[in-house]
Length: 151
Figure 1 (tube, rainbow, N blue to C red):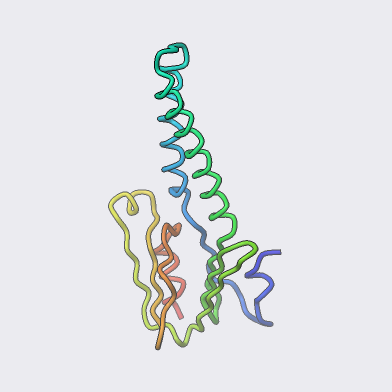
Figure 2: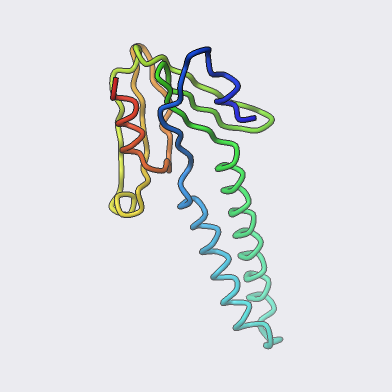
């Protein structure tokens, strides 16, 4: 059962569910591609043992980066209900923030050009007294903002 489903109050309904965008995989995929291309170039040549080692390290780091990105996507939940904004990250060591809708002052959306094209960005929910930490690489940030600001 998801965290958001467990913490819903009686009569509370979910308006919008978001997640971390798939763009978080790109650094790991890029390193793996560099490693695979390098491995293809240096696999048959025994004179470049140091370069072959660098290629293997690039493959390993790329794979670890992709696993880390998958784990981040899997353990992060972001939801907007009719009463509050809920953010949860982590698996064993969990970090949660919940903000009541009546405390929300504004929702800031920051998108780069690539973010506009691929529909991801950073969201900052500002509330009275405090705000949520920046939620980076969030899928469909404009939809998220609209679901928070629609009352």
